Image 1: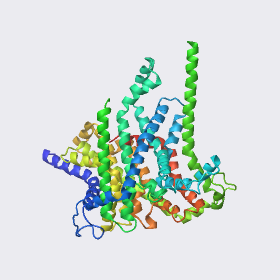
Image 2 (image 1 turned 180 degrees about the vertical axis):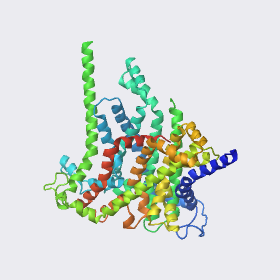
Image 3 (image 1 turned 30 degrees about the horizontal axis):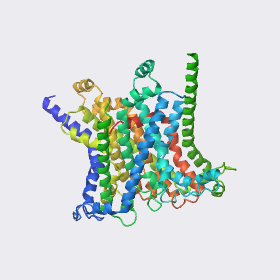
Image 4 (image 1 turned 60 degrees about the vertical axis):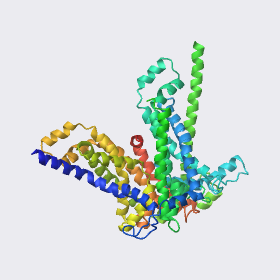
Amino acid sequence: MSMMTSKREQRRAYWLLVLPAVLIYYAVLAFPTIFSIILSLTNFNGGKVFGSQMDFVGLKHYVRMFQDQYFWIALKNNFLIILISVFGQIPIGFALAYILFRRIIRYEGFFQTMTYLPNTISTIVIGVMFQSFFSPYGAFTQLGKMIDPTFENTLMLNPDMAMIPVLMVILWMYTGYYMIIFLANMQKIDQSVIEACRIDGANEFQTLRYLILPALSGVIVTTAILAISGSLKSFDLIFAMTAGNPARRTSVLSLYMFDNAFRGAPDYPLANAISTFMVVLSFLLIIVVRAVEKRFGGRE
Amino acid sequence: MGKEIRKKNGIALIYRALTYLVFGIITFLTIYPLLWLVISSLKTTQAFQMDRLGFPNPLFFKNYPMAWKIGHFDVLFSNSVFYTIITTIVVLILSFAASFGFAKIPSRATGFLHGSFVIGILLTLQSIMVPLFLMTNAVGLYNTRLGILIPYIGIGLPMGIYLGTEYIKSIPDALIESARIEGAGFIRIFFSIIAPMTKPVAMTLAIISFTGIWNEFMLINILASKEAIKSLPVGILKFSGALATDYGKQFAALSIGMAPMLAFYALFHKQITQGVSAGAVKG
């Protein structure tokens, strides 16, 4: 085999292996992402996608979006979900992982399995289930009446409170996810270092503070990033549980976009502006998290 | 000294009891809504309206066959199995083939192409919903199985290529070189040497893809309106809309929808949790 044919064969093999994945990926993910940005700057609203006349209208649809009160409600709810993740799921998940990791209790396999269980069930099933659970006709009303006979369950009807059950379910569903991530990374820490720490007289709290936490600072950043992108991805649960109601007070950005694109008369440009905003926001937030890490963390 | 230790043990005991209590509560909170769902599915709707918490007496099983029939669960099940298995197999093959190319065959294109896949892990699906809907309509794939499979495969590829490339990089070059000297082409090397060696990461990826596609809702909800090609999650939603007040059947439908994943989790909980932590190592 001469050197030339070998090089040519190598190149052919490379493209043969790589091209199918590249073509599909670019067709269904990369191109549509860019296409969405382009559409958000035009007045294209249906009709033939390829080859029809599109006029660029600049940032008009973004202005419309920022003037829409429902946009701000949805954005606020996305931030509420990020907050419940960062200050609820992540610390609770960390604490639970630590308890399992230090083998403070037995049956850790069982408890681990149970805590992660809600993650495996279809979000749609969970959404519909909790819709019925928290509805005035559901179990929650009767549970409330057991404590206080005059209890009136308006959780899902009251626009000011409707996010509470949604956030509770989000906490219920995903805490186990963060626990699994923390636990897997704690198990990478050398056990003998922890033993040495304990023999040197460090108590449980000091071991946690000066050994485990610093070792996991990178993982905490990763979970924060996951929480942010996860929050922006949240759609199924709210779609099934409240559909954004009452009065669209439990809407999130993805649902707000969906409503504009697929409910009633389609408004594709606005929907594309919303999704572009979401992509930009998620990258911005991730940059912020990384900056915070550089500033305060980075003891790895 | 002796007193000191006993005191310490006493505190430790209290701590341990507290942690048991915490995990006991969490386990209860996890199980209770699911148990409530199954219990309620064994009541008639009237019995449920009378008592929304208690055990059914007598047990009423008829909700299940009725929900199965109304929901067309036979169709939903076979569709879900179809989408999940085909997607998982194709994602495994395509992403590991590309990973092999990226990891072991030097090319100037690798940096850009591989990088664009890694960015894909962070992209939100919402950002492609509208264009994808318009595109599938434009090319005549709306409401077809192929029009659902192709996006499913596409969204599975970034994670597959990320995990696959990392893994295949760690396979020694010498193995490939010696096969090259014996005259084997790259494609043959991929199928006979590389593919069998990727078993552990293939398992992880298969689990991630399997659970992801089985539960996927957002895309199929906009890409399929025909009953015959819908999957479980879309089909189940019917019990929340028009049939929302028929609680008995709704709970039975939800229980049916929940059962396969619970069984899958019971069988593979170790691999699933491993897959989750492997998939999370990014950002």
